[in-house]
Length: 516
Image (tube, rainbow, N blue to C red; front, side, top):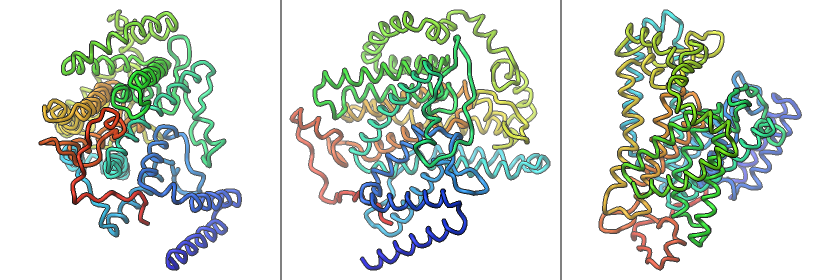
């Protein structure tokens, strides 16, 4: 106890001294107040469950590349970077000093490794090109940055140590998506994005204002996303989990009430999605429904039956939005013409950019010009935005890179579908695995219509989905009816009077407190 008090006092003194010497008084005072609040609330905040929710909150509500923490540094310290690094450090310490905090299997490490190997090969075969064009720093930065991004998958997988935490993350995702969708509607009506006012209530500085995107007679909503397309994809990815919660959620207890609550949330999410006025969202939902129709036809019939009246109501209430999103698909010639406009201008004409891009691919067909060699923004920009992650990967890493991307993206949902189709898996687990696979399929469909890895919110959410899937494949129920862990939605199971299997004798409950 004395040692802990001494260390705490020393840390506080070091923070106070650093604030007094190197930080402006107002910012220094804010730092000291923040540290004091963190210390007083340490028992509530410094738990693994709190770390999970803090990371998820930053991803869902603080727009990426819009805010930074007001600390004088050579670079802009965005909140998500600070939170990721802080949780990683806490996990490393826990793995070193706490024997109860053990590394959990990630399941998808091979597919991630295949992608990184393909990217490394593209760089190794283009060393001369990268050196001649002074792109070494950019390429290294891209590797480091992508490593930080994919670390979210490993963090979430290690934090999902019980079924209760899995349910917590899923519920938080769906409810947060509904909140973001609601404020997207507010933004559409008022032209005010509340997520750009967070600096008024949080110690953050706005580093980039929102650009405008105009379609269907008005501005498209951004909400907490970097772009309307990214907003629509994120909301689409939440829909399968909302459907799953309507059946397997812990609350409301009554099945009919639960269905109504999550039905309302689904309606809000869909309404928010329309404010992005994104044709990509229509394609994503179509792919998700097609997968469901193929493997779960009964569920697909129910969802389509519920969607038709909602679509008719939307067409009457929001004719311009629905007409732009869906009506454009009814006129293929106009749709194709829209994709041949403004070639080379930020991806406005995807098909118009395809020809010049393929000419460059022909010069470097197998390994491209090197991962990270395409610079899209800034004074050193040497390429245009294609709005096509697959085509961008083909340019950077060639056919080998696209193969690595295919393994990277397809391996998790295929394994989850195989798990969902097993007869020995209880329905709630199988349906959760299927929800994860459908969400992944939606993200994969969107790869062809925007630079997916540049829009971090949706990529982080994909990492969450993979983490839930990895938990299902390694710690969910299993052969012989045994369950490795606490039953999902214990309250629901008790209501149904189904006995919960006892935990294995060797099981030791995971402590919630973060070991520092």
